[in-house]
Image 1 (tube, rainbow, N blue to C red):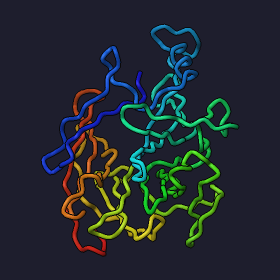
Image 2 (image 1 turned 180 degrees about the vertical axis):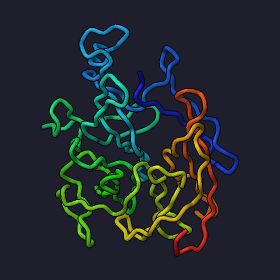
Image 3 (image 1 turned 135 degrees about the horizontal axis):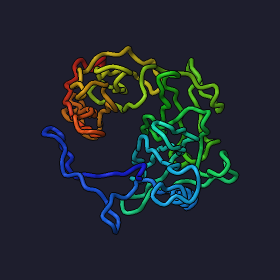
Length: 300
């Protein structure tokens, strides 16, 4: 069972939709994982595979869940935030044990997970943040040579960390926004800069001359936006960009994201994707919405 996969396209114009997605396949014709399992994780998954279970509990596995990715304009490499997840038998029986950042030099090579010595989390030397710390990577971008990453959940809001891109895998190089214009090296000093987001996108919008956050609040069909002159705020209140098409059979909108690489008209036209469930079991579709912004220098 793959815990992550990926596809790519050379369709760089989104006005008529985005097509031409391709997957890299393995020798059996199956999609390859974006983030590779370690040999230890792979061996554990094989030993607990329900089809040939050698160790209890059968069906237990390690999973890697990618979050946001950001390209470093200094060398065109990418950084991919991800969670390491312990999944146990049963529905929704999983736990994040920590988060990290992988480096990705180019699409011809797999991303590289770091190795910390000594490790912060025992038996998982790649982890930069522990399971009791904010999950950084919900959204990320590079601005003025600095990597900014948000850790967002519905309970604790969005906390913000920053680091030089070349030092993203060095925990000691990170600092965290502590409020009132202050940054701290202590992660427990981090404060929430806004609430009601989990999966989201944040990027600089040239038309608004502000950072633009796009997401769907919990238990809502609304896709909303906020703006800010700075990564740490002050962030505006939410405004509704559009009401998404309801999922078939009920439920809510999932993973609303703006895609700044498809901005057009100087950033006045943005493209927002989201997914919704469809009638077939365990199926969904991704939809793309074009949003026209107004009032440069103010809220969208």
